Image (tube, rainbow, N blue to C red; front, side, top):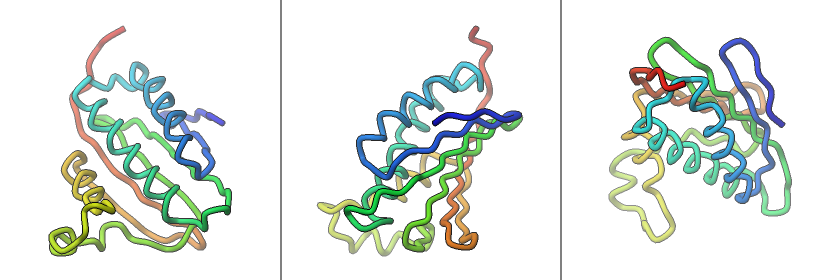
Length: 145
């Protein structure tokens, strides 16, 4: 489900990995409206997929189908993207570079590094029973019509 408010577009997806395609389509539909340049779009596509797949894979028990909300908020010099889920509490920003160095990367572990390197700001907080993770990407908007 896709909803739109002033400067914000939102989608709610099930915590199924295959819904990552719907999220990519959603970002694509927002790209022109938000005047996202191609270079930023490619970064955002990767970031959205990485965050979503991690939530879908690890926040819930395997057979527990829940909803994940993704809000894209247009700002003057870029975009804020907020993921909200009711899964297990987890602050992805608590994962340090040292953790990545010692992690078995066959199981992943580079996701937060990718997210940090492709976005300008990241923020996590717990709101009641929800994980709220926001990333910000700054860019110069294009005027493609």
